[in-house]
Amino acid sequence: MPDFLYKARETEGTLVQGTMVADSKEEIIEILQRRGLLITSIEEIIPKKRVLKQAINLSRGVSLSRRVKTDDLCIFSRQMGTLLNAGVPLLRSLSVLAKQVSSLPLKNAVEAIKEDIQSGSTLKDALDKHPKVFSKFWVNLVGTGEASGQLPSVLEQIAEYFESSGELQRKVVSALVYPGILFSVSSICIVIFIVKIVPVFAEMFSGFNADLPPLTQFVIDLSEFLKKFAIPIIIAIPVIIFLTKQFLSTEKGKLLFDQFRLRLPVFGKMFRDIGIANFARGLGTMISSGVPILYAFDIVTKTVGNKVMENALDIIKESVRDGKTIAEPLEQSGLFPPMVVLMVNVGEETGELADMLKHVADFYESRVQVMVERLSALLEPFMLVFMGGVVGFLVMAMFLPIFKLVTTFK
Image (cartoon, rainbow, N blue to C red):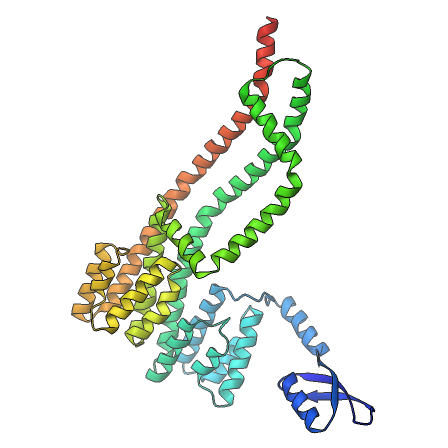
């Protein structure tokens, strides 16, 4: 529990100050008010040991980032499952893992979970107190594992799920990194050319006392516009980005953006396949771990990463609640290909739904991987040709008047 420094006054006005250990400021306020003191200030004392501990953690390679990476959770789950499978008690396993994790938020969460379990809490309830670290997917699967006595195997399944989804995400990001960098660097170079180089040519052309070609005049006008409104544009860009982020954080914004993504040529198909893979992998993992189907839908709906598909899955869940099969509303949604509907239908009829969903996930993950590799192979030369065309356009626009002048002299 943290230490707090408080200052207060007695009814006679005498200043009283001291330190007190408590769970929160509210607890100290309640204690001091019972003593009849008038509180003037309460501050938490941050011990030098805590600062020193953070410095030691940093020197040991412990990340102080507030965000817990998927890889960190994956390793934690895998290691914990291995320790429990080897017969190491839960508390001992948590103690060992708390010394090994490289993420400070995860490390703090593991230490707090260990204390909660020592106080008599279940692992599921202890995990549930850290929603920023452990998602509902995590918590519910662990709860199922605890109830069934299959916690080690459930942790292995969690690790496999995050490894598969993390690998897919990494491949998509890595395929788009190079084209993105190329586009950004080229755009900066083009802006510098227009703002800095074009005005030099414009000043030179002004001495010709001749009409400039329309192409050249357009580039010069663009350069003057950018120079004139440079400050408003620089201010407007972050404002527009902020407002766009705010809009996309709303339900309507997410829905419109995801509808737009699914309608994109080529990329729309890839985004849909990623959503199907996430849905199939998540639902298959939860069903195989013993999570009830309706509750599994509640959790998995939030993992597909697409609001349009989330809405469709909500409708499917309600149909299942009414006693229908999953395959029927899945087909009616229009978002899932016939192969997915057929595999789910076969899985429901044979009682092997979890296995069928995992086969669907494997198929669509491999399909996305192939698509990403092809897009990456196509995007790089396309970006080079596009940027080369833009640079060629600008150079031609600047040299056209010179060619015209040389021709006139001849």
